[in-house]
Length: 594
Image 1 (cartoon, rainbow, N blue to C red):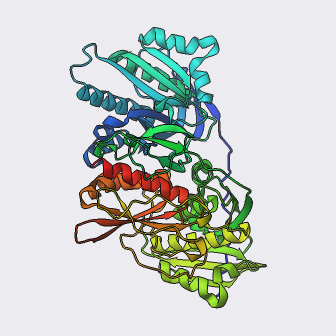
Image 2: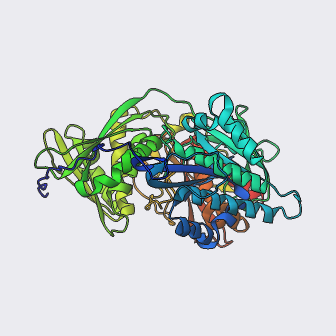
Image 3: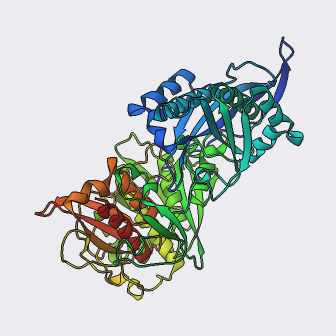
């Protein structure tokens, strides 16, 4: 075991707010407000059916707008059941003019507004192309997500501002609060209002300029995520109704969604209604983790004005605090406090640690390192009897894990290796610590209803090869590979795509199985035989359908590359009984649509 390096003090002061909000006179009489790097943010909604045309082949269209305007543009993932995709556009503005919207000019005020207008033109063009000949009046519409703090300024006292915009542009401008029953509002945050602009094409463009100019004048008080889609809790169970199959369970609670709501819906010919149920939570406890972050990486973790760390807090649900290094230290200590429950749909601690890893590590490096400070009194749960647990984690993840004496009452756990190996190891380590805090494993799986099964009569329906054993007797049948999340997939970051092979494993890690959303200690495995003629449907274009099965069910899903003599493939599903039943039903929906 190697000794730790001395850590140097960081004397940078990131909170220098002097000279902010200063005002000076311009020659033309306008007043200019200087606010260091004010962020102008717009969020425009795009119908899912035309998002491909807006992005362009290999991102050609959207990249051209980025290059022309120099604005940041993020296209977020479609949320299940939502008819719109969110396109977030933003740029930094060093000097803001006190502009008036009572003008006929349409000269963009900043890069973000320029990009917004261009993106709207692209959306309108795609809509016209997709509905050629259907709308001869050349009417158009535009939807924006506007936080409450900016919506009040857009409406104005007694509606004066919005009435003025309507009068001058001849467009209809409506501000509606989020409606949970409206599929187009599913992507809105709780504090959002949906602004709908409609009318003739030119009127809509003028109104969009006026609305965005009004928003330009006021910074939002709410925290708007720039690198992530707001975290929405995924449904725990999706049940196909009785007219589809008699092999599934029926639950008469919940609302309906369609198989077409999946991101890969274009490849699914059947429109099968499904019922969605919600999980039930139980008692919870706090898990506190300490992560070491080099001084050189702390800027990426915090982000401009705390935007990155706030985004991680929102995405994970954990409290994340940065403690300044002590004299002689060259690393910050990041404190993660997560509220954990055995019935959680996800582990807040795991989510937070993985998000931190993305920022602390450089994804371009071949090998990376993460360091945790673990209390000496609990580090034994990571080591195991005679080192059995840590040895198995090393074998399963191919990561290098070293434990040495840290400071005071903590031990230093250092994990290094390839990005995916380090992420795998971090998950296992955090889950061990989580189990130690919760203590109760929550009983066995066998006490619950097992997933439904078909007989062995044929391959028309999926063949369920294995049963659901008691948790402590289950087989470890696969291993997870997490990979580094691409920059445009912050929400969620792809929770855990898995490796394309199945390899039997032993019981070395005890009760901590592969990480998946929901019931983390009640994991088991189920194998599903996917008929050869249904493989492409199940996987979907670029893995879209398979990815949505993972997302909606919360289960770990892996499809092996190896085939049977008939060309069939084996899908391995692991998670809680509810998650596996949900994934099973989704598999059936896709298979029966072939």
